[in-house]
Image (tube, rainbow, N blue to C red):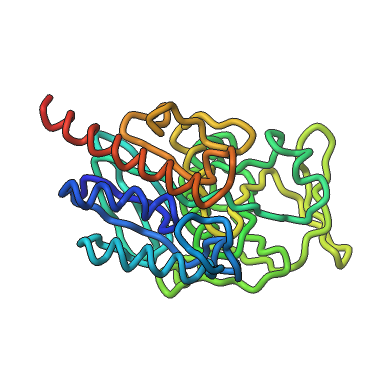
Length: 293
């Protein structure tokens, strides 16, 4: 059992960890090397560096700092967060439990060029298998995605229907060894999708080659799960794709915090570091107060 699990090892997540580790909280940082900073060649507006630095250099220095203090960092993809008395985190490679969780995965912009995708949101297109799977009992559904997150969502939907197809939208599947065998339980369609069609509700998928398939529902699980994807399933309040937090960086779910770009606002490294520091401090208070009750 960890005191805190931090999802995301960018500036917000690492900044928070520097406080929780030094406060002797058992801290686990889980993240992939997919920060937007990885592709940033020059950073010139962050305090303390007289010369431009690369995003990769800054990320590496942050991880090394957290590791030096005793932080545990693993490179893995989180596919699910559940909450009971404590939080349960499922990754591609394992499962973990924690008293508190900080979501700091940034705010990834998932560009999916499919005509009418947004028009059918709420009318056949869903982003949450936990929220909407029940409505598709014994119906034909699809999962839009090509990575482990798509397989995970398809597995969740097996509780409601066995007629499930994973649509990769023209991309080759990138399933890990852990999920490759599970993916064989589903139909896989790799054709590029042109559009979604229907009247009041989604009725079919049309492909670029002119073929089409009837469908009752399509669950979007593109690329990797973001903080907003986790928020939907947990019932976290969001606005315009950003997670709503209070002045203590806490969401409406007790013990669940968020920091960095996923909270919207001024998307800068300095902002993420500041929010991470505040979240770290408030997580320390939360854990210590819970031990006293």
